[in-house]
Length: 231
Image (cartoon, rainbow, N blue to C red):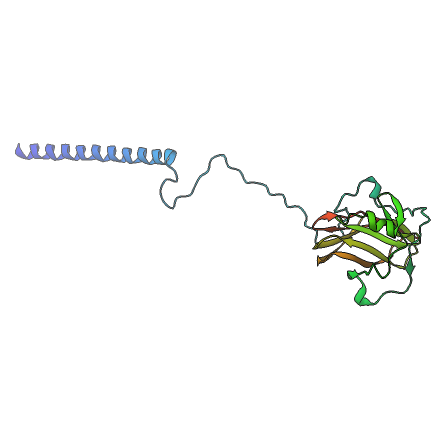
């Protein structure tokens, strides 16, 4: 009798233990599901989930390393658009077929205007004598001319293969850049660094038939532009 009671008590304790173990396992499973649904990534080292975030698209524009971009870097307006048509202007540039020394090509040179003043200068919509120009020129803006048969002009023509002097007035010290727009729409850029004030000149080479338009900037302030028609 005593043996049977002990056996029944042992079975009861085992059943209670199994019941407790089942309850604990159920609790652990529920806890794990809760963690997965509410606190995912909340512990150190867990993968970080960012709901709703999509991969951003970065558009990289083409970087042009060549100065020949095919497009003007400065808008000149309708009067300054390049064209392959040669102007009917009768103003002829003062040119030479002999190339200047290599040390003077693509180099900014000083011009002694007191020793060799032009016969006339185009300014403010009219051509005036050097004396009248010197008295009226305010000398506060960059100015650009081409040496021509009528003096310093804003437009001239010349044969291909010739060399021409382009004159500049630099009103103050600053960084200078020169832009040459070719008949095909390409652009050449020349950087001269810091330039001191005064009259300067460069040699222009008529290497391509068609209309060439040039201007320079001083601290990004543009001069007037020149039109040279090469035939």
